[in-house]
Amino acid sequence: MTALHWKLVVDATDPHAQAAFWAAALAYHEEDHGPLVSRLLDAGAVPAEATLTVRDRLAWRDLAAVRHPDEPFDPATDTGLGRRILFQRVPEPKAGKNRLHLDLHPPAGTRAAEVDRLTGLGAKVVREVAEAGGAWTVMRDPEGNEFCVH
Image 1: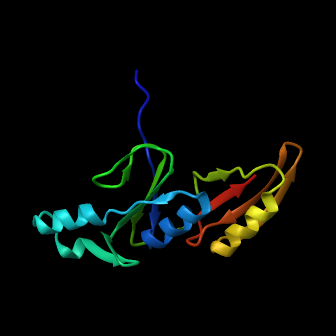
Image 2: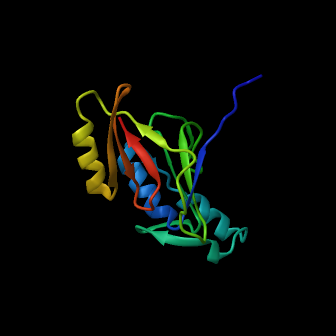
């Protein structure tokens, strides 16, 4: 069997703010779907209500994505073909604990500086963990999704 291509999809009340946060947090590329959106609007294939303008560029109203800068992508759509996170708008806010989360691994000895950087981007520290197996910081992104910094 051939390995499957996948992307992580995260529900969000503001997918564009989440994409901006995670692009900065991970040093990922925030995908620019503007040219694709424009082509589809011009062709009458999508209604204007499915779009909005974000930071002076045309975008999907309910979707935004970030991708690893070294992974392949489709130049016609700026859609990543490798490591990618898609944020999709949902009407309800996050409720309860995540069942899936990201673990970030900055270089050894830089966890505190990374936590400070992420806090500056809008993340919040939940708690510090120190166990026999290691130490890490549990954080929440701007919409409350948990992630860890090791």
